Image (cartoon, rainbow, N blue to C red; front, side, top):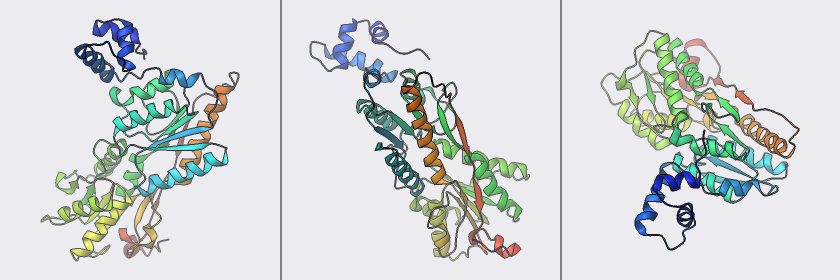
Length: 352
């Protein structure tokens, strides 16, 4: 990918390099019309002035950045906690940046971390992995040699370290379990629209249905979000339709807990009349009135792996003779069967 330069911006705007430099540094002596024209080009191509290059010229700061979606999400909070503890043990200070699932916030935080001269970053990517405008800032990090680890699906053409979670397969296994219990009307409550994990989990849901000869019924799909309230509202709507589902798979455990709350209010017995499965295996899952069946991704392993990969890059950068290459580490998952799916009623399984 070709790096955008001040000269290229100047050529596109029909001005001199000095004029572009004055706009970038917010200096006077530039007409408002010219300033707007240059700024539009900078924003369109997501040009990041000097920040990355400046970071290269400094010695280690013993700080690393974590750019993540949010910490109101229990799972993200647990992973962030592991990363903070692990980096501290290694002698680093962690700077936490929250994107709220907004890729523009991610871009802004990446720039800010470069200004702070961090030694590297762990990024739980908020956007799509195949849209140029949502990944350009990551290619820029790569071009300037700043160490970073991505927790997301591989981005085409971007070589770096990845921590990979098979969200599609996790969702597939959850829905497959419900299908094998005899359910055919399985509802789905989604996560935030456009989030790569949501896209993957919805694909897993659809693929499991297809493999078992069940057509995807759009009436059984509802848009949710991250939390309990979104899951609750979506479940109230979904469970109010005439031919309601006999099972619901939720994007995450907090939404699934919202489903349990809605079912209780509506007098629908779980799991006798409704099976519920979530994803993430949050700490509260086994402590609920109806313990929650869920797909578990080992959060401690995710956090520690991301830190190990990042520190490996930082060490390699300081030791030119060390050719470590880039790594893709796949983190496994497993289905934790508890009472909410109804497996115990059907097969005598004792949930953990």
